[in-house]
View 1 (cartoon, helix red, strand yellow):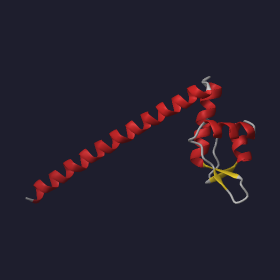
View 2 (tube, one colour):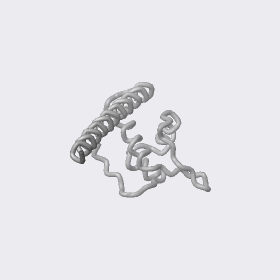
View 3 (spheres, one colour):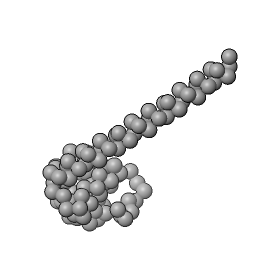
View 4 (cartoon, helix red, strand yellow):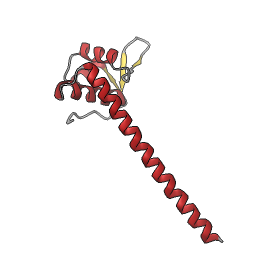
Length: 112
């Protein structure tokens, strides 16, 4: 994805639609179809999208427009991508914990 996301925390729907190059109603539709996109609402009931929402929307746009997925197919692919990412994170944590354990055992042996 070659879209540059401005360095800020919150984006209004107009900004999001310009970055995604889609109309605001498309962003609102995707928000209703993909529950992982949850903008914050202001007191005036305006949507404020966080950076992670915008990144998710960029992924959704890529799946739908560039890779040709249907809405249901994109939902399924997003779940698969999350599982893959979660699995990698768990492996990384496990590897780190094993390394720490080994270093602690080495330190224990050194102290004796």
